[in-house]
Image: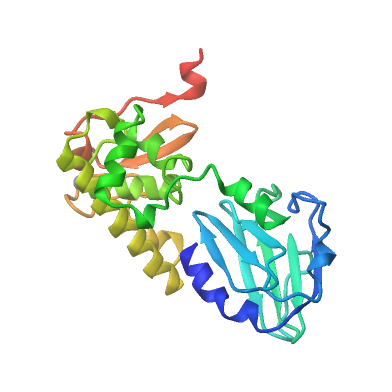
Length: 269
Ligand SMILES: [Zn+2]
């Protein structure tokens, strides 16, 4: 997300918006204020809070908030450049460039909100500190204050913002910690390892995304079932936990133990 933000920050502020919309009915989450009030205004740039991109208007009256979820893509098309026929959302600027949100698949999960700055603050108030800005001391407080499995804590946006299921896998592998480890049982040294892994893995991801790398190249563990661990060479394993699939290295992370399936559906039986 930080890579998206950096790429869009300059270009979106150059020209005023001449046409806001259309937006897919499932994508646009707000109706008041209506999208057309953006027309004639200019953005002040792009900010990011975890996985959300914020486009405040230069006059300070409105904020366009975009959450891409897993499959949404945001692109700035040059004047005259061909774009998708029916994007989930589109904004046209005075020079003919367009900001276009597309989403693969039939399920529309990405969202666009047009908010006042007060509404935007409220919308974002529940987010925890951003993973990229987290030091070991702050992480220690978060970890010790939430007794639960590590994988689930890392994905919780209220605890730490900006880490999804794939990065939780990458981070825990780099930290050599079990996804099922109980947060309250981590030693100081393990918390430090976790803080380092969050920094190094999110930083690595950011760098690769900025160079345009795809998922396959970006993730070294996530989605690589049976392939050799990049540290020890043992085959990577997979387990279902809550509603997520965890990828991990039994040798590096769980002392050779294979983790048991803990799907919610199974636990509820
Ligand atoms: Zn390994």
